[in-house]
Amino acid sequence: MNAPLIDPFGRHISYLRVSVTDRCDMRCVYCMAEDMVFLPKPDVLTFEELSRLCGAFVKLGTRRMRVTGGEPLVRRGIETFLQELGSWLGRPEGQPGLDEVTLTTNGSQLPRLAQAIRAAGVRRVNVSLDTLDAGRFRTITRLGQLERTLEGIEAARAEGLAVRVNMVAMRDTNEDEIDSMIAWCGQVGADLCLIETMPMGDTGEDRTDRYLPLSLVRARIEQRWTLHDVPYRTGGPARYVHVAETGRRLGFITPMTHTFCETCNRVRLSCTGTLYMCLGQDDSADLRRPLRSGVDDQALMGEIRRAIARKPQGHDFIIDRQQTRGVGRHMSATGG
Image 1 (cartoon, rainbow, N blue to C red):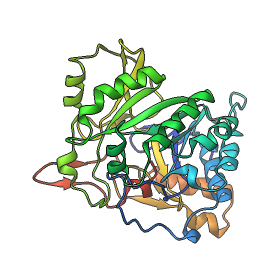
Image 2 (image 1 turned 90 degrees about the vertical axis):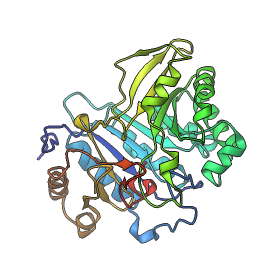
Image 3 (image 1 turned 30 degrees about the horizontal axis):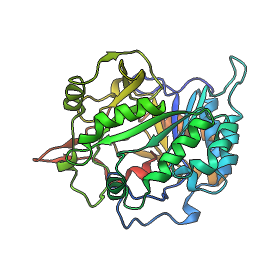
């Protein structure tokens, strides 16, 4: 039962993204609707249940774990959960354990929690930041305050956490800020990752007009910056270059223009215990049912194995004037 998780296409599934909540203190236009209806509390797994599921994945060969939301830091008790995950770090070679626990956040809660995050064993955080203009930030996030996120990045850096800024590149929204974001990340000592918008859930926005292919963006960037491809990987789908002028890395996540499915090593666990084997497909497995029915760990791991055996080869996102094809669930419900 403890053999590694291998999907039908020979890919070793070693990376779990686990959502602890669907709630957020922002309403980003590409992530959720402005009038979101959040899950009732009984539907959401307790931290004890999430810890047990995460432990089962570790025993099945998971080496990297990323905590996501919604906004994970708005859930009360997140520090204790991170400590539980951190207890899997530094295990002797040959034993089940984690190489890394990371976190994706909008940064708003980092001023009060950065120290606890570091103490739990987290060494890297991804912070969502799509603009450095306060008014535009408010428009994109609907509820957010730019200064709070910037304070969060500063707090994370002060605690010695490596920061990667995630910027969703959107046509006629923030594409004119990409150069300034590259320069700013160089100044503050953060890497930057550009992400193509994806057709996930009804957000009340027409994503056809916002979609910006990163192949075009990279060509524009190369007119000003000197880019060198590097083999650096974090376990996720980003492909990186080194920016000579800033000394920082720049990543590209391209689910639309160049899929990364052939090397996918990831699955996503929602806060309800739903396991999504592919970000861009609706097929899923309900792990809450067996978990709450009292099955033992071996049976729980068996459920996980059966789910991985159904992992599809890839997604088929499309955004264009003729058609848009994606999935009905919001990104916040899937998990970061």
